Image (cartoon, rainbow, N blue to C red; front, side):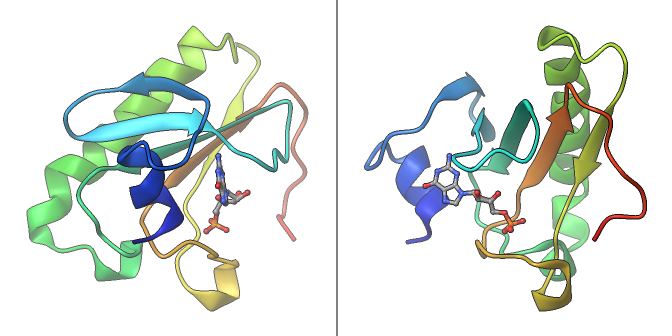
Length: 111
Ligand code: 5GP
């Protein structure tokens, strides 16, 4: 089980801020911005590179959840949505997740 599966199963704690039958959102344990939320599908897709046509609706949903949470968390001056897929991107948990970062100016290009 990945750490995110353990959070979904409530085997380990997390600061969950939103959940439905398909996905869950919680604060990142090591935040890189004042707001740093992870949006995680309950169905295990290891990473974006492994997503299939079957995941199309789920992938769209994760972005719309990011949009809704950005509004709820008052990220009115902007936010960044990130998916790290694979080693060069720095992926560290092999369970697809969307990072939602905000409440500070974010540099570009990313490191
Ligand atoms: P990745 O590097 O795979 O894109 O992102 C994984 C993220 O999961 C990292 O930002 C890391 O801080 C976060 N993370 C790792 N373990 C835990 C945990 O046990 N709880 C929470 N809330 N976040 C975690």
